[in-house]
Length: 203
Length: 160
Image 1 (cartoon, each protein chain N blue to C red):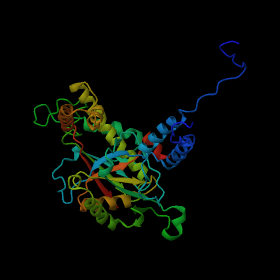
Image 2: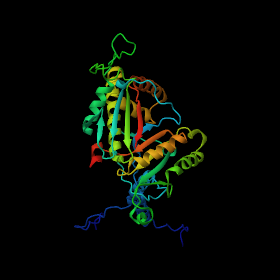
Image 3: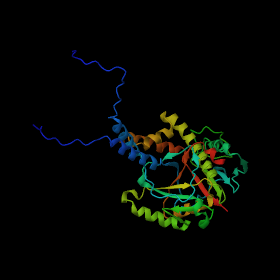
Image 4: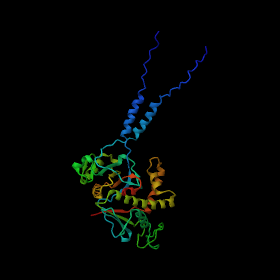
């Protein structure tokens, strides 16, 4: 007497092999992309050049075709650029009676350097022959200088690093209410140390 | 006759491989999700510089990429060794950048068109001249948000 007929079982033994095949394909084709970098805003098409800026409020940085760096008329090492930029931005040279007085600056208050961070402009001039790698290093040091000062102020006001706030703001998990709060805080810090970087090319 | 048959001694039970497909599938799904398919093949040398103060480029659909670098060894004979711009799959001159950006921008949906970022993937041995030309073109078409795409690391490694 034959039992009730059953559908024959498919042999699943080769499933692992098929999965392995696919796995190896994806392993080989995967490229983990490097998608991070330095963000920068270019000036608009016909934005007017800043007019009547005092010489003391400009930090001229020159990069020549031999990748040498000159700041304020002196050839310096790239390692010193960050400290020089911080000293320049944080100087707060305007006197305490004037409207430009900077009450949060901790710099030397040198009258020959920038009045306050809002007025201070970093001017970066590069040559056509300058190597891109060196240029990026300079940009990186300038951003580091700004981040350093912004972190200090953010710690003082909100007990959190500025860069940490930005990272939190960019995360998609952060709830909306928190984002709005962070946006407000980030704006206020950016206002204390606005990034004013002017770039030009020198032939 | 005993009820329980005596086990043959000295034989190890075989390890069950039934869960092997599950494990492999798990790995497979992991790689399937993290894989990014390359949309254009690189024709230029593209060794990115490194920087420490970097920010992540979050959303892939809001990025337009421009590659710059010296042509690969196989293209050297035709295109020389000076750094070139690669847009999509072909070598281009700086004057093509504006058109390319406008074309890519038109492909994106309306609400993204104002928040696009241009990612510059430039070989660290390229010169600033070609970058300045690109930046000038970008300003002409009002593509002002730029990201100098870099690896992460100590920026002073670029000097070597």
